[in-house]
Structures are given as structure tokens and as C-alpha cells.
Amino acid sequence: MKFYKVVTLIALVLIISSCGEKTNENNSLFSITISNAKKIYTLDNILNLSIENKKNNTIDSVSYEINNKRIGSSEKNNSSEISLKNQKLGQRSIVAKIYSDGTIFEASHKITIVATNTPVLYTYNIIESYPHDTHAYTQGLEFKGDTLIESTGQYKTSTLRKTNYKTGEIYKKVDIGNQYFGEGLTILNDKIYQLTWREKTGFIYDANTLTKKGTFIYGKSKEGWGLCNNGEVIFKSDGTQRIWQLNSNTLAEEDYIEIYTNTSKIKSVNELEWVEGKIYANIYLKDAIAIVNANTGAVEGVINLKGLKDKVTQHKSLDVLNGIAYKGEENILYITGKNWDKLFKIEIVKK
Image 1 (cartoon, rainbow, N blue to C red):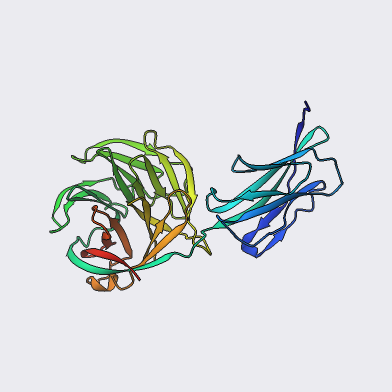
Image 2 (spheres, rainbow, N blue to C red):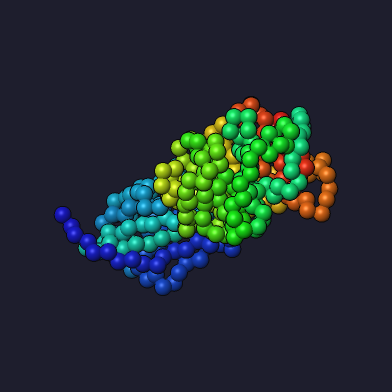
């Protein structure tokens, strides 16, 4: 049995955004070579990896990892075929552990993985419209039965409210405090979880009474934007391309996915809704909703909602589309925006 000491090398770095590969010349011993290298990769790609052995050292074996998970190995310095099938999208670092002359060396190589397929495009038909409070700067929207639960933003006017979605009547409204800017919400196990924007604080309420039951803190993500859940995991957007996965018991941010189409990342992910196994994500400042694979981050579809904002009363406080609610009706969403005077029931149809 051989025993190895570990030596970490700063190795090959791939800068996708600058359209080329740059080698760190301080690495004097080993670097990773991809014989079929590309600017971007997809989940159906298989990489042919080997080690560039600059000083002709004896190599006993090589193992490869992504995100601390082993993805392949080779004896000596034989080429390895590595599948990207189960990886998450975004910029990932391939780490090679090179076992040589009693020492373990490490070399790394950064790649960017994007969605395999072009998103399916959808449009909409308006089925009905309902009154909506023009003072509601909508940040989160979700149904509990037939009652619409809404979170609104802006400092000094942020609220959590229960409403009759058909009439716009506000059954109950709770002010969250002048120092907080309300953001997205989600409902799980008769509890409402509500975010704040920059305060790194979330609130927990009884879903029936809106009585505040506690708070939670989020420190890894940039900010608080949107929430949804699949019954087990809570998903949280932070205004970037990331959607975080929160433990529903501890509310700790345990992992994240990054949102990519087949060509680029989607930034400014905002309000979220869980719809039939997918995350529906409103894109801030865009009249569009991305349909996201919650496991990989791939954008599988895009709903073009252009023109919907034109159908509400135009006034000086009118702001962007934001607010997705799903009531269990196939291909049906309820959509509104910040300070809109209408809530729309729309049918989603393939374009």
C-alpha cells in the first residue's frame, strides 16, 4: 500500500465569459487537458480528460471530482471519459487528484454547463380578470384553498394579507414593520414563510390567523426575493441566477441551483411558484416567466407575458409584472404585478 501527502496546485482555469481558456503558468507540474474542449458544455456531453505531465513525473493514478463528488478515474495517465449527465448547471470546477511518487497533487479546470435544449416558448390567453389593490406592491402570491395570500413590499408599507381573489376584498392585513421591505412568501404545513429584501430576516406566521410565530435568518444568499416549495424543500431566489434550497425544518440554506438556458444564465430571478413539479420563476423587469427544472436549473420553457401590463389602468405608481399563483387548474395561472389594479386568470398555451 502506498501512502501519499497532499500538495495543492493552482491549475488550469477556464474563463468562459472571455471566450477562451487561460492556463495559470505558475502550475509547473500538472494541469487538466480536455481533448474535446468547448466554450460551454451541456448535460449530454462526455468529456475526454487527461493530465498534462509537464515534468514527466511518474503518475500512478488519477481521480476526478466535481463539487467533491467523484466522477471518474484512470490508471497511470490514461484518458478518462467523464459524463456530465447528473451535474447542476453553471460554472463548475473539475478537480483532479494526481497520485505521483508518494504525493497527491491537485489540479483544477473550470467549465460552464448550460441547458441541453432550447426552452419551449409559450404565450397566454386571458380567461378572466379580478380587482386588485393598486396600493399592493406585490412580492409574493399563493393560494390557500380559495383564499389568496399576498405579500407586499416597500419600506413603511409592507404587509402580509389574506384576500378574496374574485372581489379584491382584504380579509385580514398585517403590517410587518417600518424597518422591513417585504418580499416573497410560501405556505407549507399551515405556516406562511415571508422574506424581507435586505434585512436577512424571514417571518413565520400561522397560515390561518396570520399570527406571527417566529423568525429565521438567511446569510448565504445575497438578498430575499421569492419563495416556493414542493412540499418538502423550500426554494428561495435572491435576485441573481441562483435559487437556494432551504431545509424546511431548520430553514438553513443547504444548496442552490443556477438558472441557465441553452446559451446563458438568467439573472434577477424574482417571484417563484411551484407548478406540477417545476419552478415557475418571474424574471425581474421582464414580461416573462421561466419554467425551471428544480434539480438541474435548466430553463425548460419561457412564458411570454408581453402586453399583459398594458391591460391594467396606467398610473404613476404602476410597476413591473410580479406575482404568480397556481390553484391546481391545468395550464392555468393567476398573474398580477406591483400596484396593478387587476389580477388575471390566464391559460398558458404553447406558441
